[in-house]
Image (cartoon, rainbow, N blue to C red; front, side):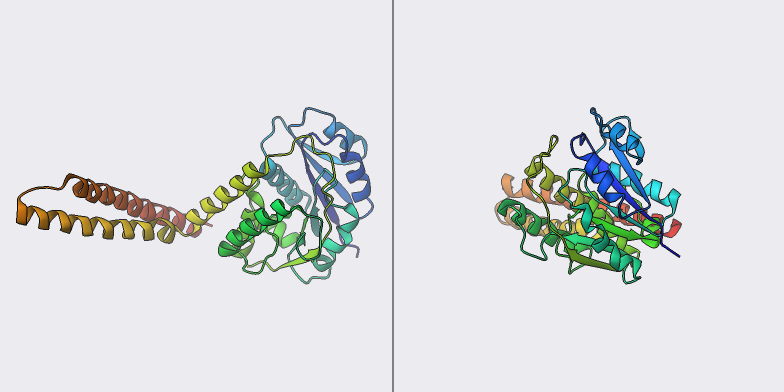
Length: 294
């Protein structure tokens, strides 16, 4: 029996390219679903007229919000596989079979179209930023991923129903890897080519993009490992405060004077340590309760 495959496309003000992406994707899948993320142009209408199903957001909520809606719709459709690609033609729809192949063969649960597995025309600043972000993501998810931010991915039914997104920004790509690891999903990368010459009417500043991803990853790390993320700095802060308290007491015992700066450091480090340790304990308890409920 032929597998039922859906292509999902997050789109924001992509009226110039959405038609070609939809038409070419339809050659390889059974249904195309476009999330019109609050576009103020004809993106949604064009996709709908070409036979795609359109999920509309009243306002722009971000890339992660669009992905969340697409995953939710995919769970309702319940296909054998879902492939997600961008609407701006950076991703070549003709690579869809390559992305889907390991999924349909039952090899893995998730396939990532990696921009770093072959010689590509990626600008140097993008390559450097991607390397930094991927190394950060590798510390909290899969250790051997080469492109943690690629949006060209395929998922099998198990992955579709396992991954629930909360991130609304560009950090959603990393959150998917974190949740996939927690669920024990198998993952694989395949090489793809990227077109960086496309016109992008709503491109986010690369620096803002990178900062969004880094902050999102740090947030996910703090939630998943609160004792390490907050507890360890809290203990270090308390040890520092102990050193300065001893200094303060010894000075007072010998001179009957208080060194103001030393005492202030002791007080400040004590307060910081207590706040960090309290935060670590509260988050650890909350996370434990949530995991038990799940």
